[in-house]
Image (cartoon, rainbow, N blue to C red; front, side):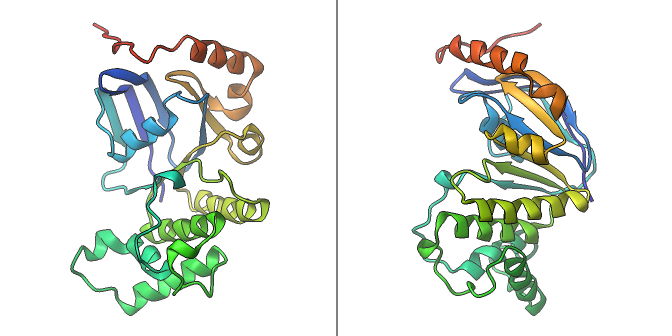
Length: 244
């Protein structure tokens, strides 16, 4: 079910200022990988580039299996909660690629949406407007939508930020469900204890790749110090590095 994802000398920028610099490596099929690093390290930018939401300046992003789907969950701060839409309607958007803008949802699709809400612990929330939900409830809804997308590669940008412990534990169970189905899961996280507890692999990003591999080899005091030192030296007006 999973798919490998290969980055070859990937550089991504905003207005010619570097955000991700010459990153190469492979997320193996079916792996669970945390992307860590200081603020401004390019973590969210990397996920946007992988999902196709931000252009790559140079290098290549290659999905190993033809036709493998990629699902992306951005940070909640990037979402508009004022749009008048129900919980069930949000979850059904997970079927968007199958029905398009003018298609109709089948009975089976609605049943699958209700089942996804049950998995995330929101059985009776179908008709609730999303604008009335708490932060944790909304994140559960968005995880339910991801369940319907049935993607081989799942990208999560700070999926547990500002959530209570119970919600975090329930959503980590969904994440482990994906891992058990051999999907490739990549998540930006700040809590290193969570990374050590649930993510076998990690990528330490400080615009450049500091380390990539087994979590116990990546989350070291030496790498944390290197990341801090690099972050203190960053210039917002720096030009993109040009390599021959």
